[in-house]
Length: 126
Image 1 (cartoon, rainbow, N blue to C red):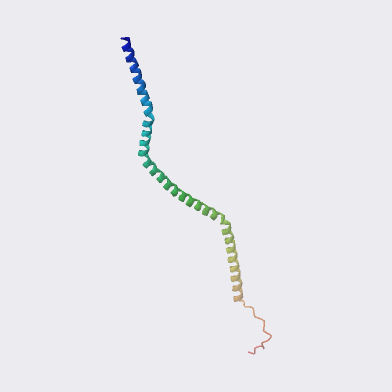
Image 2: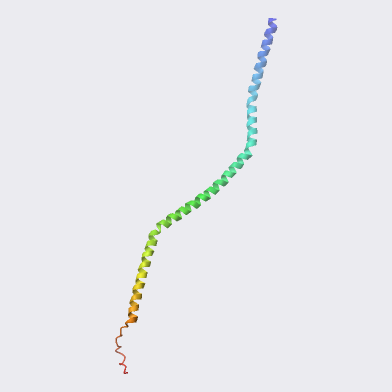
C-alpha cells in the first residue's frame, strides 16, 4: 500500500512539474501573441494621431511665423517714430518758409518798388 501511495504522490508531483514546465515554456508565446494583438488594434489609431499632430505642428509653425512677422513690423514702426519726428520738423520748416515767402510777396505786391531805369533805354517822354 505504501508503494501505491508513493507512486500516486510521485505521479502527482511529476504531473504538477510537467504542467509548470508547459506553462513556463508557453508563457512567452502567449505574451508575444497578446502584444501583437494589441499593436494590430492600436496602430491605426496611433498613425492617425501622428498625422494629426504633424498637421497641427505645420499650422502652429505658420501661426508662429505670422506672429513673429507682425511683432517685427510693430517694432520697426516704433523705431520709425524718430523718422516721423524728423519729417514733422521738416514740414513745419517748409510751412514757415512758405508763410514767410507769402508775407514777403504780399508786401512786394502792395508797395512795388520802382525798378531802376535801364541805362540802355532812352528815357521815355510822356
